[in-house]
Every structure is written in structure tokens, then in C-alpha cells.
Length: 272
Image (cartoon, rainbow, N blue to C red; front, side, top):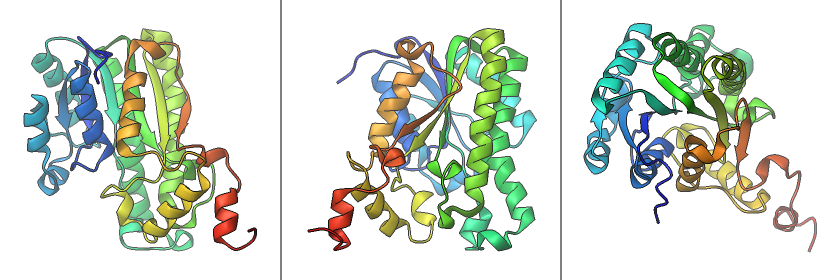
């Protein structure tokens, strides 16, 4: 069911890889809600995915861009405005990568070259995007930027290794840039901390399946799906949330504030 929440709005959606990704679901929902937008991802990621199918489904153009390149991001914002016929109203930052996780390197033995790469791709890319957009005055007043994060930025999840630190930096950038962009152009910037979600990136983490089940049992509402997260992002892009900025917003079925659940205790055999 569509509410036309984004009717007339223009956007940029990063990170859509396949139909299981949150960015893919956000694109579908944004299209349903009346938005026009461009899709973007790094050229290497695009070769791994099926983004052309999403572009056709949502009548969108694809503009490849390396989020670690100021030149590529400048081109992205300039071309997006040309394609869409005006300034941007919303941006989804759904970019994350950890070579240390891929190579199963323990947190206490991190490869710092890989760590720097993860920071550049997964956190500094948000700062770069915002800096380029601000310099170009590419985002309309009351525009909205949402970056996807995870609760490991506040709590210890051993298997999340360097991405926990990287997500903490991402959230800090959203707060700090949210202040400056809010003062300058009323642009609001938030992060959404999503439940464990069965995406290509999530399932690449060791022990993800077991942890997914654990979080689902602990959360009073269960794990939030990628589609649920997309719905939430749409509200943050809409005018209904004009005064929400510089926040880390938990979208996880209550997981982040639940210490223990009766269901979990019963499964562990602690209570009957």
C-alpha cells in the first residue's frame, strides 16, 4: 500500500547488490512511494550483483561511483541532478566492507592496512559524500541522509571485529556533520541500527546464522526484516520526520534494550 510519502522527491540510493539487500528494498519502497532516484555502487560491487534488474523495475538510472573517490562522488552528485532534474532530497548510505572479517582475522590481531581500507570504504565515505554534496549545494533544504549501522558500535560483538569500531566512527560522522549541515541547509542526517539481517554482507560473518536466531529470540518483536527497515528509512526520507537529525535510531525489534528474555531462558533450560 502506497501513501505517496516521497511524491516529487529525488534521491540517491547506494549499495543495492541483490534482492536481499536493505538498499534494494529501500529502492523498491521509494519507487512505490513516488520518488525518483539514481542507483549507485562501486564498479566491482556492481559486477557481483544484479542491479540492472532493480534499475529496470524502478525506472532508475545507474551511475557507478567509488565512494572513496572525491572525483567519483562529485560526478555522482552532478550527474544525479542532471538525470533527476533538480537537487537531491534524500540519500541512503548503505556501504560497508571489512577485509579483516572476510579473512577471519581476530580483533586483537587486525591487519591495519585492511583496517584502514574498511574505515575509508565504510565510514569516511559518508563524510566524503556529505562534504561533496555540501560543497556543490546538491541537497535541498530539509533533505534527509540515512546511513545504515549496527549496535556493535555501542556493545561488544566479538565476531564483528573492526566493523564495530568503523560503525562507531560512521555514527559520529553522522552526528557531527548533522550539526554542520543542519545549521547550513536544514539537512538532517541519521543512522539506523538494524537487526541482524540475512544479506550477502551479513551472512559473510562467521557464526551469523546462530547469532541471527539468538537475536530473534531475545528481541520482544523478533528481528526486523530488510523490508521493515526499508519502510523505516522511507519515513526518515519523508517530511514526517523533518525535525529528526543527528540520531542513531535502533530498528531491531527491541533487541538493543533487552538484556534477557523468558524465551531465551527457557531455551537454555534455566526456567521452565
